[in-house]
Image 1 (spheres, one colour):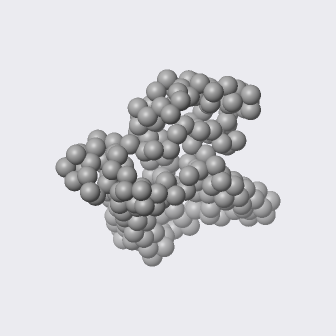
Image 2: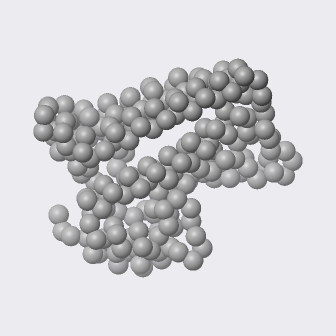
Length: 219
């Protein structure tokens, strides 16, 4: 590769690192608690603003990727292309299907804004969708499928590696919060179900999931 291509990759790496660090800081419970203590009037809009900022800051990274793709590394062809695109389609359908099991109003931050919620903690209770019986983070799993079933150039490969690393690290950070929110019930769930990639021997049956949910403390 040329020096210009390497420089573009180095810049892309810096973009991803800055994005992930900022995203993790703003999503952390510690920062949200500090904002809630210092400026409680800001908390109803915090989640909505966080999501909007996450999307906006992603746009220049995507622009850089497509402006400076770098050399092509591999391209799915023949049966491989059918398999890759089929898996990507299933991941998209899985994501859409999973939305019915989430409180999307809470996830987006609209519920907090309308109800003037000033708490730093998420309000959604512990629940298990059919996807959560097989993997603790279905959206990350679907995202990994989408990333690694695409044709690869240098920028896409670097981005795929960075996104995968962030999903691994970010899921751990997210689970630290979930343990605070849900305590031992989430710890037992973690012992039974893998984090990012389903394993054939490690999952919850429908009965096991119901038994675990029955252990939730009453609210």
